[in-house]
Each structure stands twice: as structure tokens, then as C-alpha cells.
Image: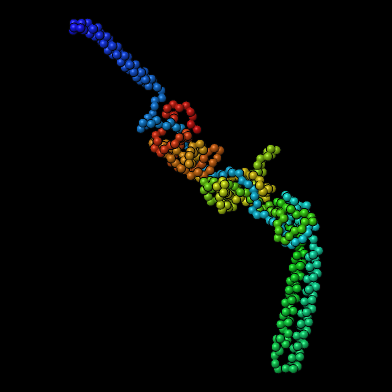
Length: 399
């Protein structure tokens, strides 16, 4: 084949290559056109937006609601639930042993008794017999003493006849024997007194007007001296225990001597719950092992008709806090922290909480800067930029 034969083939392929290149350029142009159109549409939509994105250091600015606290002189009033208890209770423990022969009807759980009223009586036959034996022993000892005195007098006379100028020795005068006889009489007298005392103890009573908490004493039962067979208490020893957290306790300091009102729980048929005047007397020495709360003890300043175990509502009057800050409890976030806006950024505050009332927190005065944030914050950090919601047309009302 000659070179002249090759030329027609080259001429046919050249137009085909040019056509492919032209198609490629058209496709590239279409891609760039689509991208350019997208950019233009995005720019138009951005210009028409009514809520522009707020950027700070490359991150969105948090939009929050704030409030200003109410500032006023506020008397702290602690409202808590307390439990009625007795300061001390008394064991129903006989001082002598014996069989129960009678029981007072008041000797039952919840029974009331007067001071000195006999609650139960033991069989006294053995104790009366002990008195008889003690009387007989005393009479014998007194007779021995008379004999010793007579023999001593005889010895002195005989010694005076034989040796009038010499003092009589103690042994001759029977002074040791006389001293022993005197001691024996005194011992017999003491034994008689013990027997009479034991006889008086066969009746059991208490020196105060009170109520029975529990008892297991029944007629015919044999009781042992010193063993407990129930408990009773003096209603004047009734008090109230009120659990409070340490922050509230600090707000009430000094707590002892503060006046309080104790109200019984509302009953369905009562229009008004009875209330009693009381006073804080002391703070318990240790925190509750489970709740970690401190306990305040209140004593009543008037007679009450409450029973141990009753639940009561307690209101304790605390000190007056000048310029106290009052704001919703929802503003308190993790770790008892209150966040404020300071120069457009988050700033933490940890004010001293003194009380809570009707959904509000009362604190000692503190710097609230531009306002207290009531919006719940997610992992807030000091210095994070924030903006107030009202600046961006938020219709949500601030509390």
C-alpha cells in the first residue's frame, strides 16, 4: 500500500476528533452553569432571611431568656414537715419481783394516768412475812444488847471492888461485845426498813401525769425486778423533729430560740387545722445517715394533744434579710449554680440560698450583672457568648 492510499483515512478521522472535543467543552460549561446558579439562589435566600445566624468565634451564639430578681427585705420562713416524738420515755419496770394481782384499766396502749395513780399491784404476802421476820430479828438483837449492857455493868462493879485505884480494861468491861450488840441492832433495824420499803413497792406508779406507749403486764403474770414490761411518757416531753438541709440551717443561724408554729395535718371534716406555739431549742448532734439532713428540735410552749409519730406542718420564723434576692427556682441549674449575662457572656454565680417560698428562691444579695438566665443551659462554660431572646423578636414572655 502506498502513502497516497493512507491520506483518505486521516481525513475521515479528523472531523470526528474535533466533534468529541466540542461536546466535552459543552458539558463542562453546563456543570459550571449549574454551580453558578446554585450560588446565586443561596445568596438570594440568605439576603431574604429574617433571623440571621449569630456567629461568635465560629460558633452560634446561645439565645436565652433573663429576668431581674425582686429585691426586698425578706423574713425567712421555713416551712417543713416534722414528726412528733417524745424526748424521753419511762420503762414500766417494777423494783421488786412478784405475781401481778391487779391491773389498772389505764394500763393499756394509749391509756392515760394521773401522777401517783397505781398502775398495777403485786402479791405482798412474801413481803409482809419478811417484815415479821425482820421485826423478830430486831427484837432478838435488842435483847442481846440489853444483856451485854447488864454484863458490862456487873464487870465494872466487880473491878471497882477488887482494884478501885486502877482503870478497868476494855475487854473486862465487855466493850467489844457491847459494840457488836449495838451494830447487830442497827443491822436489824436496817433490814426491817428494807422489808417495809419492799412492801411499799408492790404497787407501781409514776410521779407524773402521762400516757402508756406499750405494755405486756397482765394479772397472774410473774414480774422480775428491774425488767421492762412496757413504756410510758410524760406529755409535757412531747417535741417535734424537723429535718432541714445545711443551707437552710445556715440561713436560720442562730437557730436556737426561734419561734415556730406547729399545725396538725388537715382533716376532711375540719375547716381549720389546730395550731400550737413552739420554739426551736436545739439542733441534733449528727446528720441523718440516709438523707444527710440535719434535725431541728422544737418544744411546745403550751399544752398539746399530739401523739408520738404524728406528722405536722412546721413554720419557723427566721431572720430578716435586707435586700434579699427573690427569683424563680427554675433559674438554679446544676451544682446550685445561677448563670448571669455579663458583657454578653456567661458568668456563674453561687449565691447563698436562705429559703424557698411558692416556687421562688430567696438568696443573700449577689451581683446579677445584666440579668439572671432562666433558660436551661447545656454544658455551659464561663465566657460563652450569649444573646437575650427579646433582641431577636422572640414573642415568649419573660417571667
